Image 1 (cartoon, one colour):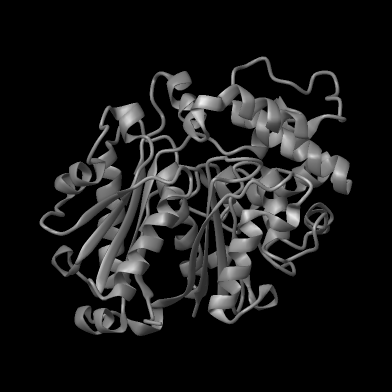
Image 2 (tube, one colour):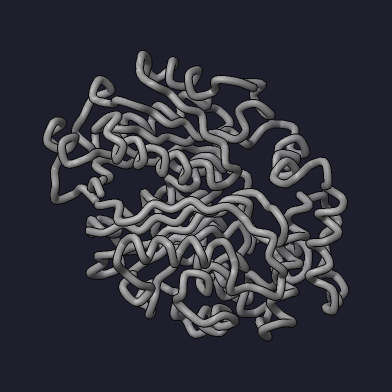
Length: 412
């Protein structure tokens, strides 16, 4: 199999960029990735643009990539627009990897950018309502909410403010895990507190104030057991990656000591499994496939970035990636095993809860963190001696799981 490397990668600060345009953010990420790789726009043979909100929020219903790229100097090469809900950015990277392995180019670009903070917050939140089969929305919602039956929310644990229906679905996943495995709200809060503490060391994070477990528990409620710091915010931002084959690295004169190998790049879609079949979870199957391709296992991973649109996501994905047995994610989080310096550091960037979640840029932002870790350039949040890293990024909802999941394994 043709070897593929991330030669350059960059991201903007994720957050509320009310005074910046979409193409301004994308341009910053592009220039950062080009500089990091030591190449020019003219070296890129194909480009993959990831953006989910361009049509709904900016009215750019078609060719968003060509429009954004046209504003930042990319033209004349194949441009592909990629939408896979929150897994869009990772899907763009996967397609770039495929193009390199197919030999259509030796240097490819994946870039994701979003402007989600607009005056009409309800319109922005409505984006998430398109992340499932809209023709069966009420049926989907009822099915997913039933997962949480059997646990009664305590008084005062439900917000009166409007939030996306997906927050209630995340809470239902929490409640199912709580009644099935004994996971507690405090364990979920431990994940959130840990990630907010990690984010204090990440200059690209939307939030950088460390929180304790008690502060997370006493924060404004969303819907039981979730409180505000346990959930990812609306975010603006961009991230870009330049990927190369060996020939591409030679052609652009990239620094091989800083080029990180893509040991596995996997995309899988949902199956109509039952909720009581967690061993068949799409993320678990994607991880097993990625481990097989890379010739590595969970025990070889030194650091992970996983999709924690809510803190519960990290617990579930820590189990799916094989770091702990099913049901073991909550206790491991409370013991500090996923904390920087612990047995298996997860989301040392701060995760989506703290770093932010600009949908189309999220996956590439996760890869930015892992590349930085494998290069040994993460500063105060560095995982010492990191050689292998894994990323999990999910998008949308079909049946009782993510509609699309990406798993990448990177190696130094």
